[in-house]
Image (tube, rainbow, N blue to C red):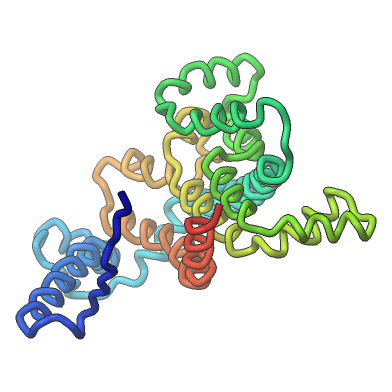
Length: 288
């Protein structure tokens, strides 16, 4: 029996006046729910501690204390946290995306016995809860002396990410194999195909993978909390969590100022790369 579906496209222009009003009212409510915590964080970062304590329900500061941002650097090792997070994130993202692309190329272009089983085994690692492997991984890295260093946080990640391998493999499956045959006829090998054909064509998908990995590594708290003991190694996520412990009373104005500066790099990255992000998601989701 053949099933037929009637394609129906909806747009705000086809809604009635009441429907439009409800749609825009709902969108405004959702927008407010998403933006209110961000606005509260920004305005609180510009208040004095006395106003935060005495007027907890007020949104706007009575005096704009821009010096809170400078005080974060003067009274707290925020620059160290920022530097640690930056290099750790960049190294991890570059390594993870490159090697994930390399492994995805192998799964997409080569045929070997047991390939399907290996790929299913790779995907099954995404189903494992992090809590299951947390203790064995810590015991392993502690045995080889990697604890209190960035090695447990970078080396396993650089070996590739199961999700990114799956994402990039879906994109590579959509690329015509005639490109490989043309390179082979010209005398090129698989490395030529990968570096001169696949990589340039997969920039949108790789940009998407890089943004996903960047967001995860920049905000990762659990990994640094488990493996890092020295404060001079703390990234931003762990530094902000430790921010309150460094003071008898939490300096909310400084904590919010540090939080605002911590979220700026991911926002700026997404603002400039959103075109490639959306393009990569669409291409990877519709091909393969």
